[in-house]
Image 1: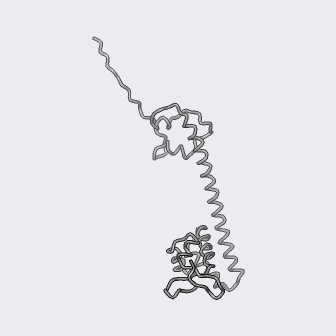
Image 2: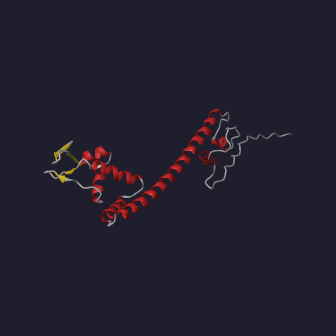
Length: 185
């Protein structure tokens, strides 16, 4: 796994080892380097990139920021401003503002996901009642279903399947009727 030992006794990691330990691809690790967010501690005599074991945490940090919707470019910009800041409190204020904005976005995303969860639960409960439908036939029967599903409203996820592309409800197809002519003479 490790190729060399640094002076403090901890082992360096090759790029593939770093990628495996963090669940990233080698290309992602190289991309982090290209953006100036990560750099190898040294290179082997064969030219392989060697990373300090702390690079694992650095990659996880980059992944956390990415999970918040912060691009690699934005991460690099924030990091540059952080290290170039003349005053710690100003640097901290910028981070507070960034984290506050991302917290609000995260809470909004959670709220939206909870709404989707409710729609899915309601849709599944509604569809469960369709297992006992006595109406054989095409989905036209479902569109104009009169079965009591035990809910106040048809879940939006189900209702959307019953509509046309312009949002209107599908009209029932006319039934085919066989008509026989009877002649009276």
